[in-house]
Image 1 (cartoon, protein in one colour):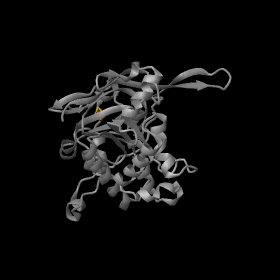
Image 2: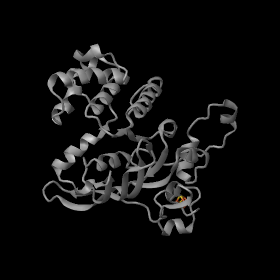
Image 3: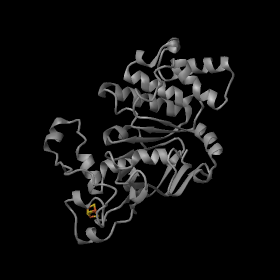
Image 4: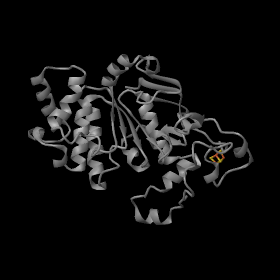
Length: 324
Ligand code: SF4
């Protein structure tokens, strides 16, 4: 159960900035992912958390090479995905599927649910036509939809139901690993918990491994075994989910945590809160030293001069901050 299935090592993804339409001269880089490493264990979930601009979505896309990595390794089940040729990577995408944030935009409105769910099976040349239809029905049932709705179109479904269709489509090719990019953030709060529960049920039934990307720490806590907190392309803190909640160390994690409401109103009232001031900086012109420094109330001299490396400060708990 605790075998590492995915190991990301020193991964970087820099997007070149180009000046002018004709010369297309490179004038710097957006450092969307800037040297990150983490492991995901088989059958478990890693929550990847951070604000917009932290690079978490780019991590998901770079793992499955929708973006080509600038450097680093992505070892999946002993294979370095970075070295795979395009046709080999296409086969690998059967094993690693990605679910996107917006259930409205990610489904082709001209196709019926049957065609949407069957499409990945056709692309990967799996099953015959009758089997594909039967499998589409089975999958709709599995994700909590009525199999009789195969002939309907996406606009006939609610947002939550559309995300379930997206899930059925991802599961069509029997993946082992799913990267879910903000899969519930476009949905009503009342629906979010139901979809998260479906993800959890499916994980247990199908022994799936997840990377669950979200800006919402409260939401990933429920589903994650481990949590990595990202800021401007770097992992600032990584540990087991319970440890991060009980004992957040990095000032950024503490600020994110204090935005999570506590269910007990009395405790919530008396709780000390850290308000995160200012916006996330640009990852084109990063500040000297610690990249969180412009928003950090604990900043000291060394923080201006040296970027802190991530290091293990207690068992399975690593943090990138000069306070530790
Ligand atoms: Fe704050 Fe310094 Fe830690 Fe960065 S290294 S988070 S500036 S205390």
